[in-house]
Amino acid sequence: MNTTQIKPDIKDINLAEQGKNNIEWAMKDMPVLRKIRERFLKEKPFAGLKLSACVHVTKETAALCTVMKDGGADAVLIASNPLSTQDDVAAALVKYWEIPVLGYAGESVETYKEHARMALEHNPDIIIDDGCDLVATLHAERPELASHVIGSTEETTTGIIRLKALEAQGELKFPALGVNTSLTKHLYDNRYGTGQSAMDGIMRAANILIAGKTVVISGYGWCGRGCALRAKALGANVIVCEVDPLKALEAAMEGYRVMPIAQAAKEGDIFLTVTGDKHVVDVPHILSMKDGAFLCNAGHFDHEVNVPDLKAHTVEIKRIRPFLDEYKLTNGKSVYVLAEGRLVNLVAAEGHPASVMDMSFANQALGIEFIVKNRGKLENKLYTLPEHVDIDIAKLKLESMGIEIDTLTAEQEEYLNSWKL
Image (tube, rainbow, N blue to C red; front, side, top):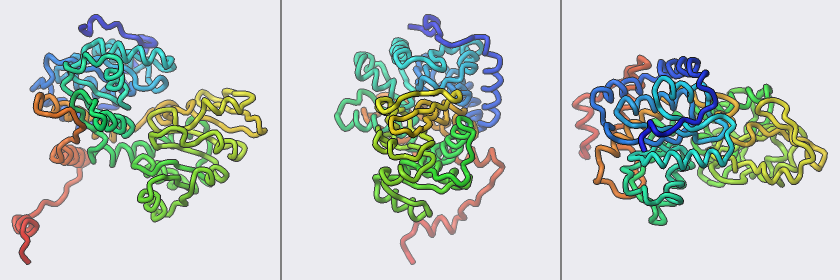
């Protein structure tokens, strides 16, 4: 199927002009990706290849998709979350870049799954994934397409967990590259991007003061570190809940209180999950919370806060603001659920700033190029982008920021490479 045969499924094509402005605005703050685009326009590394991308439809991911098309890819884009799509961006990609987009804000879960199936009908050579949804759908429903796939890239921690499971079971049918493993991705996107955008989403959704509140962060990976750092900077008292002793120890050494969620549930004012697991904040925890507690999630899936089972203990659900619902509980208390338990930073806000996604999507673009260049040479396993590519991205980013660093002298190089005293 050619992209000309794929009919876009978006909310309103008339939003395209604003979307074009937003994409161009994002690209101004993505100098590394612009450098890659210049080379891709000349070299066309993806000429003749079909790309199916399943990512959050934001101005930043749109920039990535336009760069891939400039590199010769025949691209189709679907949303990786039913609520995170920026409808003006989707319209702009369809109208001005002729990239079919399947996704609109507020689509049902069933529609979302159908869009994934349609993206696979594109018969992709390469896949860009966010949460492993497209790869998992292919493996579960369309395994016959796998022989045509050169490889895929994965943006998230959650997706890498799923890819590792496929590899461990011997079921991964093509090479995959975990972009989130790259230092210029998880050290910056996860920490600085998630930290800022999650707090932004909470404040936009509820318009509450963070200072003086007790914020409970479940998960102290790089996303959790970033969220804790930003909450603390805004004046919050931060509690960290973890299952990993090393991460829990690190959180304690950073000055945060560390305790089980069952205990933290009684103390917190705002609860934010960033684990990639399910039912991290479960119904018994919620029922023990203070009246007026806020619940939100910045992990990929909406399973982390057990909102569905909470409904059995709810007498009324009231929409207070666009992304803020009051759950009046059978015990007489109320809790407030932000963004329906989905990604608060992408549903209630606009996701990560373009400057940090610049590095993440540089990894995506160069990751796909790495897979294509090594076609037939890679095993069906999960890879990390070579270290020298990570370093090149960091150099380009520093250059764009006007920052210079030292270089080793010949004497220093020799000393570091010698074992002699």
